[in-house]
Image (cartoon, rainbow, N blue to C red):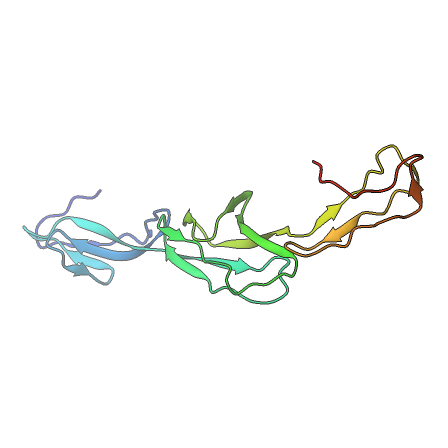
Length: 178
């Protein structure tokens, strides 16, 4: 704050004001007229200056994580703007399904909302769609079959008789368990 009389030239401060998430864009007087240069002439109707601000544009860069193909276009927005995260429709990772985008320690769903406060990297997170089938010979003796790996919605051939048996019984089949 400085005091000037009407008609006096005032030197504008060489200190650039700062505001989180914004860039200083100059000064305007109370009538809305832009002030340029390093001096300002004080008048009866021109004595207040207001800082003008432009929001910083931040970017969300998408990393495909372990995906083998595809890419996702970056998202941009202003400081503290709520943006929707992109889908994963162009990413592929065999035998895995997409479960979300990790930003920091939080996983967000595709299409989920994120408030921009800085440039960030969203990394695709994946979950295996493969299952292992374990066998219990249920009181039998011998070698338990090795686990089978099964793809989602695929037919799996189960072992019929192997190096295992149970006295007085024949293998009738396998039942699911938990």
